[in-house]
Image (cartoon, rainbow, N blue to C red; front, side, top):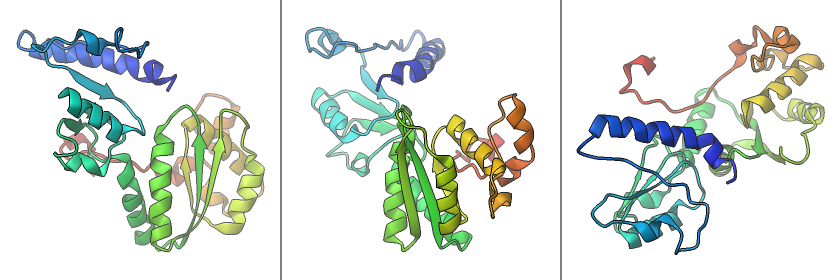
Length: 244
């Protein structure tokens, strides 16, 4: 996607510098940005068999296809956010590894456990279709898991790049359907939503008066609201600082 280099380029740059500093001179790491996908100009045409080569992608919906290409070329494919069940089959994905401790398609099961642990029977799910693909990767498998396990849900997907969401209408509908909302979208959109929550008459106000700290007048509205925030993410328990 167009924003991938902007978002992930600095991470690749600092990551390769760090790896080279750690493993030099045994290993040297370099990376390429592919702007022209014609075979004669792409980096694959300049591969040296004596060097180790890998394809590193941050987030994509086409990993199984990339895995097939990497297998044919006999090079390593490294992915992060997204994965696929075929990664476990080394006949289908012999060169594919993931750095993610919890691939996106498994969030549905984890969120279902959260729902069941709290005895929630209905949820309202909002997904923003925007430049950050992560939310589009998490949302659909969550929806499928909820539906397969009898969770009553309303699933709203909107294009944040084209038409701003009418948050007033959203909250009125949410109020009529559920008291639990899953929001798959960037922090800035969450901030807008929560300012609306604080501004209008909302029956479940204690569940939603929070926002993103931005240093403007709206911060006072939601100073106490972080008590209502439940940040759902995966952690690596081998990192002692993250243990609860």
